[in-house]
Length: 406
Image (cartoon, rainbow, N blue to C red; front, side, top):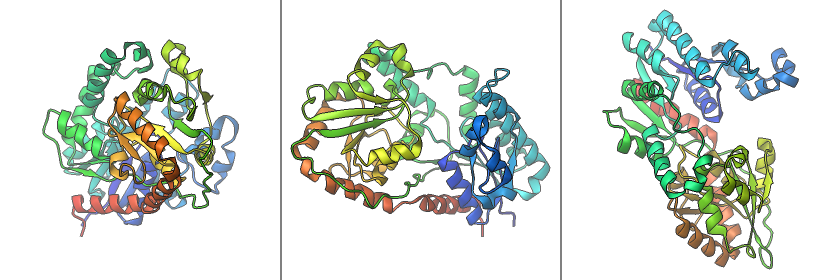
């Protein structure tokens, strides 16, 4: 019986790596298709310095080398900012390439595993070949986030300019996203909130949905906690500085706690140039525009609380990153927090876009500051129970069930 899966993603990230590694270890990987791939201890890897250093971010497990097909032209042009190549161009180019590959190798393939905005053409081809279509939605459904942001426009008009280009997607692009969901034989998401966004706001019939949360980074068990007595609590926000992260609610909730809390921001502040309210708020805090990922993890260990009041997230990797470093997280009910955090035990959950709820929770944290180390250790315990290997195993087992591998 055929039992092989083709997976594709143009740029790759931690969850894509987890999926590909899991398929390989489960012996159901046919091939992995991407724009650029790099492998440790190879001559090409050593060449990736200077202008090519970005390629090292596309490093995959060495055992995947013989399974990997690359199509680099569009992505290289995009990185070099040549000929106006966009990220959509890269996605569509790979989608086309994989569709041609499926046509040639259909007799070897059981299923296609593809991601949002990069699945339409290959799914169309797979349907012709009677190959199952497995769809991964790493963000919430587009109707959900547009609805939430339209509500935000009316609630916080002075912050609208920091919402970004979320409403700029063409009708054609949104229709394509809908068709990908409609063609899927099974849908995989990383949080219960993402699943709910499909169930509540996708107006068409859809396939069964599996929630398989991502893994946590390696836990830093050597974390040392300093006493909070007689000092301000140290709060940290990590993420792009935009109203989609619920920043206005965070700043409003922290107003009046200047004597109890110091806030540090890590993230790109591009929108501050067009949003005076955001610029004014940033100027009152310590702000670090950029840090490498490893440095962010180290810095998290120096803080008492990570505050992440996002309006919505398909997951929210910064949450799992902080918990793995022993820093408890205060986040909202529209993130992966609902899947990992028990309020008051290993972190805190509040209603999204609710200043009063956030303010009350901050008061609670201040009043129970002596419990922060205990809550941080519980966050680490939670992280220890779900390494990335757990995600790999659960996802590959779920895929096996869908494609009925014996």
